[in-house]
Structures are given as structure tokens and as C-alpha cells.
Length: 237
Picture 1 (cartoon, helix red, strand yellow):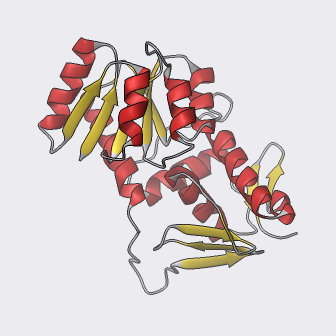
Picture 2 (cartoon, one colour):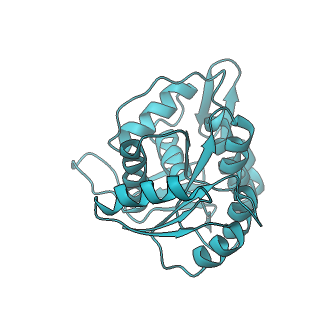
Picture 3 (cartoon, one colour):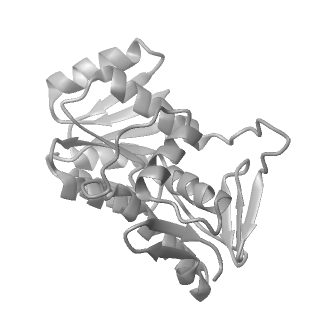
């Protein structure tokens, strides 16, 4: 794994890099946002670990500018309790976030999960389809492509998995907690407690998916419906 760590806390960066280096990772450390953005854009890394509070250019702006030219996976490192910053980061295209202080073991698990999502999924059973078509949407799990009305959509790895889960359950309303843990199951991760009243990450990702659908075709805005107080459902009316 080639990882770019953009972090100005030198002690934390060194400790994190040492741990990841012991687990088959090559880590490059950059201590400011401007240089970090420059290195991330060069496409030499498999994943970017991005701190929010950085000199010269903060993490939010780095993520925003990076997403205009690159789909490299990004995990944002945030101070505990900075929910607004986490939501903004997800809206800008971050694939995951981790609150400080964090354990290196959990960080490694998140990194592996994000990178695993970037790889095409193998069909594990003859009954498991690799492609789904619902109301103008075509989503292919093996090729990791999603098209609406024959227009290709650009989604993050998490958004693709979330859309795949909704398409698999087309016509059935799924709650936020169910969506959260079904995506985790798809990635081979254990379920976690999810409080939809506090964690709005599912709403943020679905907002981005809806925007991509609407950009592809005006009918896309109606494909995913919100069922107030319950959750979301995908499917033509």
C-alpha cells in the first residue's frame, strides 16, 4: 500500500507511519495542505490520509480541490466532535473519516476496507447477479460502473456500495441503520451501532447519489425516494 499522510502533528505522523510500515505500507508524510495537494494530484499513492487542521491549506479545501482531478480514496482525520467538518468532508467526496484520538489498528482496518472497496467484487454464488437494472439505472458490481439513462455517473466507493444495496432491495424501504450495516456487511466489516439522529453520513452520501442521478437525467431526481421517519427506497413509482 502506498499511502500519503497529510498531517502537521509530527509526533502523530511518525507514530502512524511506523505502525503502517510494519503492516506492508509505504507512507509518505507531508506536513502542510499545499504540498499535500500537490503530491496527491501526482497519482503516486493508493490512498490519502488527510488531516482537517493543516497550515497553508486546510483539509476541507485540499479534499475539494483534489476531487476536481482525482478519485484517489481519501480518509479524513478529524478532531472528535467536529460533526460539521465530517459532513462537509463526505459531501466533498471523502470515502471515510476517523475521529482523533484513534488507534493505529482501527486506522489500518479502515484503510484496508476502503482499498478493498476499490477492487471489483467477485461473484460468490451463481444466484448473485453482477449487474442490476432498475428504472433506467444500470449498475455493474464487477466493473464498478453505474449509469443512468446511459450516462455514466462518478461516485465514490462508498456511494457505489450504497447505491448497489438500494438497487438490490428495489421497492423496499430501508432504514439508515440498516443501510449503514448492510454496506459494512458487503465490505466484510462487522456491524456497529448507528444512531440516525446523530450520524447523518448516510443522508450526505444519498444526497450526492441523488445529485449524480439528476445530473445524468432529469428523471433521476425521482429514483430514490425518502419515506419520512423510516428511510429510503429506490425504484420507479
